[in-house]
Every structure is written in structure tokens, then in C-alpha cells.
Figure 1 (tube, one colour):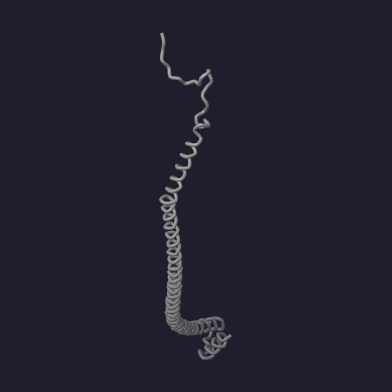
Figure 2: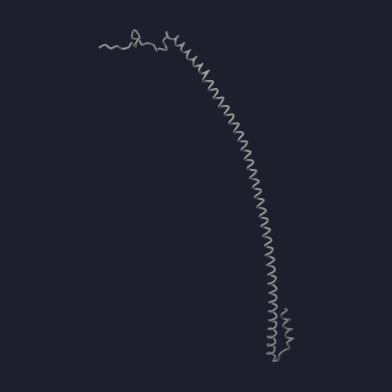
Length: 178
């Protein structure tokens, strides 16, 4: 049975050389190489590189504008922070002033109340001392009377005769003074 197979071998049984290395096709390969690289160069130079350059330039200008905007916002933020800190310091100073005024007024009010209370207590103490002195004087007067009566009774019992009331009163007064 005979089969038709494609001729894949070189005459004489040797294999054909690799097509790009065949010397008889070098000229056409070089021509196509120059044409393809020329077309690629023109395509890159006229279409792709200007687009890429435009994109790079646009991106560069966008980055510069973003950096400028960021710098502007940073300055605004720093100004806002400074204003906030100033307001906060003013508020703290105001709060401290209010607290100081309140503390001073409360201290003055407390001092006034304390002085009023001390005056009331001193008056009551004076009244109590006067009452004590009056009570002591009354008690001493009663004690003097009782002492005179007791001394008179003792002397009468001892000697059998009642002494003069004035002399007993003078003696009791003399003893009570000691």
C-alpha cells in the first residue's frame, strides 16, 4: 500500500535547514525586518509615545496640583488648629476667671456667715456668762444665808446662847472671800 506523504526531507535524505537560517531568504527577511521595525517605530513615535507622554504630563500636572492643594489645605489646617487652640486657651482662661470669682465670692460669703455666727455665739456666750454669774451670785447669797444660819445654830448649840447675827454674817463673809 502506498501512501502519499508530504515531502519533508531534503534531497539525499538530509533534513532541510531551519527556515530563518536559509541563506537564500536572508534578503526578504531583512526587508521585512526593516519594514516591520520601521512601521513599529512610526507607530510608537507618532501614536503610542505621544499618548504616553500626554498621560505622563497630565499625571505630573495632576500630582503638582494635588501637592499644591495639599500644601494649601495644610496651611488652612494649621491656621484652623491655631485658632482652635487660641479659642480653647481663651475658654480656659475665662473658666478660670469665673471659677476664681465664684471662689472669691463664696469665700467672702462664708467669711461673712462665719463672722455673723461668731458674733451670735459671742453674744450668747456673754449672756450665758452673765446668767452664770447671776446664778452664782444668787447661789452664793443663798449659801451665805445658809452659812450664817448654820454658823448661828452651831455657835448657839456650843455655847448655849445665840450670837449676834451681824457678827456671824461678817465672819461668814470673811471666810467666803478667801
